Length: 403
Ligand code: ADP
Image (cartoon, rainbow, N blue to C red; front, side, top):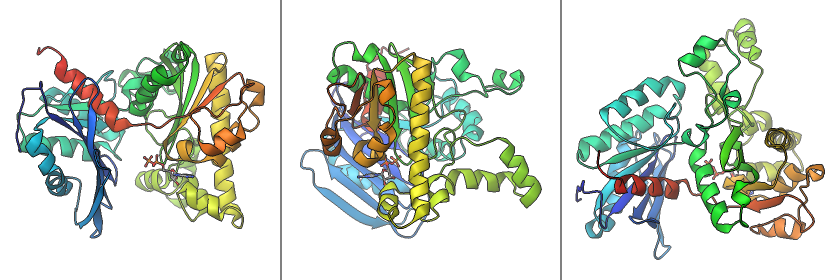
């Protein structure tokens, strides 16, 4: 593999999205608009039946192999073997990482010792994702010490939210040391805003917009005049909407109650709200929306989980419409938002008073615009692409003059 630090000319950018039990990766050819060459994922990390799956951008052909990767760092060998042939033709010039929590960083950062020190300091903010992300950056730095790495943060999109949307209502001293509402899924939101500028009617991007990223992780963001106004997630990605396994917002009194009555520890509470709650917790069977929709007709627990998810999403859309002073565009994206007409319809049902009116044929077809022609609000279905947002940020950073 070529280890080039030139940062210019032809080359590839490797994008790593590696904070959870699945490691996603993608290779892009560098350019003003980076071109995807290959994308893949490593699943079931830490089990004996891990798999690496990848798809070539040019031919669309997919391959899959069984691997054993005890942890994220152990994923590197199979990953590098998978991209070796591509890199023989187009050398690697940089690596971009998705970093879920960037604290107060407002934009992507070229990884330096100072950035690593700050990420270490933030570890405790997001023990679900940051430790593995930091390890991966370190491992790549050890192998390719001259290759620039860029950390791209899910929090950065929301950095300019108004002060009132960032404040946590706890003693002020905590705000001074960084305990505040941050928001996440920012790489997805940044990508969607760019896409909206491309596909929307003139000035739509400057309107009052609610973006609904509904995947395993789910959140909504409110944007006005291109500026972030509010978002459902807060200090950690556990908050906001109920998700596949995360609880979303809870009464803060619950933790003390469970500690008193069941002797629940902090770690047990953490596991409960991050891995055993949300759709899985309510349905007691699955964290996957497709499964729940199949079970719904004969399992009232699945029906409850779906109803709660749609009800909470609807409530947040209403709340954000109030924060925005009205609504012009509603965007659905990610696994559930992009692919489930029935969930979109249930969320929008009852929002007619805001001007949200779906065309059911368009919705069933997953058309780019699913609102009817009389609705005041344009309701869109969009594909999001966090990896390409990272590749674009890395490309931009490489193009900047050296300090
Ligand atoms: P992640 O947040 O892990 O990237 P995704 O964005 O892929 O997750 O979303 C996964 C969720 O999307 C799962 O709950 C899955 O069931 C749901 N999903 C995907 N396709 C459909 C569909 N056609 N109908 C309903 N839900 C779907």
